[in-house]
Amino acid sequence: MSPTVQEAIAIFKSNVQFENANTRRLYFRGLDAFAEYLNETVGEELETTALQKNVVVQYGGWMKDVRGYALPTRKLYQAVLRAALRFWRSNYEGWIRFTREEEQEASRTSLIGNPEEQSSRHERLPEDFGNTMLKTVMEMPLPGKSLDRLEVLRMRALVIALRATALRIGDLCSLTKKQIEDARVQNGRLELRMEKTGRLAHCRLGIDTLKIIDAYLEAREDNSPWIFIQHGKSNRRKRNSPSFFKNAHKGYGARLSTTSSWRIIQQVAALSGLDREKHFTSPHAFRHWHAKTLIENGTSLENVQAVLGHSTPATTRVIYAPEPDKRQIDAVEDGLQKINQDWLKE
Image 1: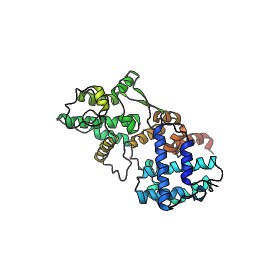
Image 2: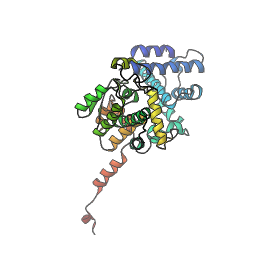
Image 3: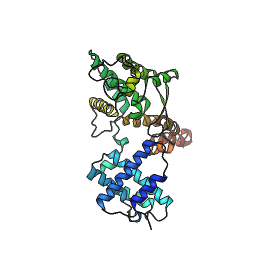
Image 4: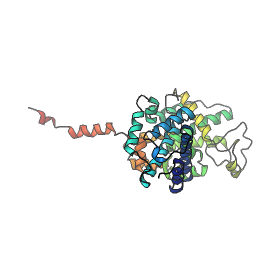
């Protein structure tokens, strides 16, 4: 006899090992939402054998139409459900009655005529996004008023740091002055353990990137340990100790939140003429642009993996290089198939 889905979820939670607490929380939230979906749509404890091959698709539709979840959240939670199905299918014979291939086919056929689901982040990434955003902030005039000037300098530093490091915004907001100084003496090399995966991301801060960050820090003249801070309406707290700022949650010198960073980037995107309804313009877009640029310039997936802090090159390939590089293939094929013109003479 197969267990109920709720019992199967509990078994998954108890037996699967996660690299870090953040990943565990994401998986648990996704599976808890799936349990809520079954409770609302079925209204009874369903056995795992009763799950249908299109359950992932139906779960996605419920998240969109009933809960109003954003597309990235829906995709994440659907990926979590697929992982749970693989676990049950691999470890407990007979629990899941449809194959992985049948599940994938059901997902593929559901995308017909659904442009929102078909449109990937790569397709919505604006052309030369990183350079476009940098040009916008660097051409902004510096105001005379101190606080307004700080706003522009912070905007410049945030954009150039995202562009240079390809870090997730949470990891970037956690950067400290000490880490920047350590990178400076290492020829700009910065190794940072990613909060999401626990893996090291290998970044490099170039001379020009450091100059822009330094300009922001010099204009502040405060003891906050954070690179990116809240400015508040007053800078009277500038002389407080680093430990005070480290524990502060709001006000001048406290660490800039990811939400505030997102708003700043959206402001720059709007000034760049980019429509966030049509384009991928969040802070994470810099990560995609950076990886895409590295790959297009011939960087190996193993090295791109090291920059991004992915666990394996396979992860990098799935996200950033799912399709073959047709331009590189064409260039190689042209050379391979080129024939000495003398041979073609009759």
